[in-house]
Length: 291
Image (cartoon, rainbow, N blue to C red; front, side, top):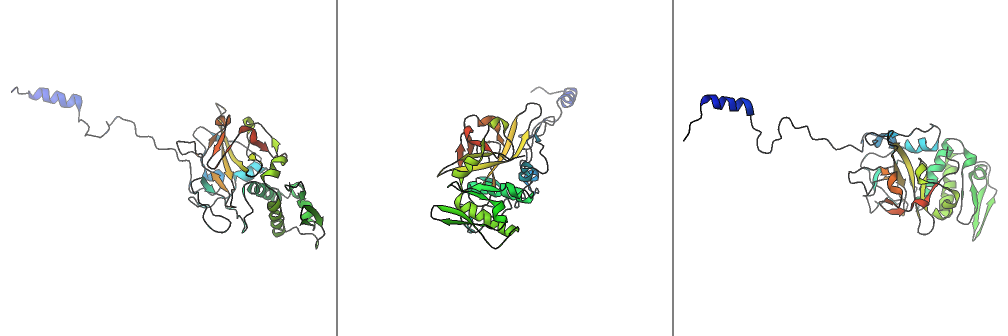
């Protein structure tokens, strides 16, 4: 057996150094990249809970606009579940990424289109734009909050709907909520779809709506938007109410393999797939008065 000289052993140790242990990466290997955190559990609003994708920036909107109002909606604590109007848990707890901290009421009324009308009406009420609050019933009757606020009430007898006098002006928030209850009872996707203007998905903004009118029908609303400055790529967050009436919630993106809740607008060319509904691109609309 050949004996290695001490000089050869010394050169070998100096040249090669310590070999890595089995399964241990070499010291020169770069550290593994951590997965991107899409959710900040400490965030209390849509803007602070959802992290913008790397390289993206949130679109800028005026502080008095509907888009700003939606983006800054308060959220329930991270991990909250979606509840129905009767206090029961929704059967599908896999569709949402966050839950808005807004009550759903105690009746099975605030469903998909109603949730969007609720958000829109709450924004206008908060902005004191009372004359801009109006929604149509499926029958075509215009439920104008200005008249309700002034003290009139809506009478429904069969197919006949009319305004009737009441006890005087009712400008308080409780009366406003009663007005919305009346709207939710007689309006829906079949009526809201005709109040919104058709729009190209290529110009998607916060406050815009994907909606299919009818029975069944459905609607979701854009609640945040980010853009990649160099490429112009746009991504959005979507939210919905559903049936039975339930908490309004920000949706997961079922097509995102990396767990991102953001929807890539470039992928809306053929279909818009959400966890519980699929829309066509031509089912995209906007409120005509959205700032």
